[in-house]
Image (cartoon, rainbow, N blue to C red; front, side, top):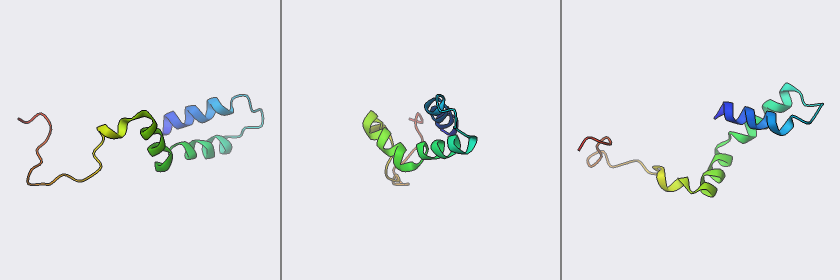
Length: 66
């Protein structure tokens, strides 16, 4: 995620001649916050594939064990 955020920030600031490494880092940090990732996940619809609650340990078994 950090690499993707860095590349996205670099691409976004590529035309800014005054962009410093600090500016790229701050923009990257804004892309990899949990809130930003939640918003992207909801827009893409991937939240239906994610576990949002802890499973019941008595009923849970690892995937592909049956």
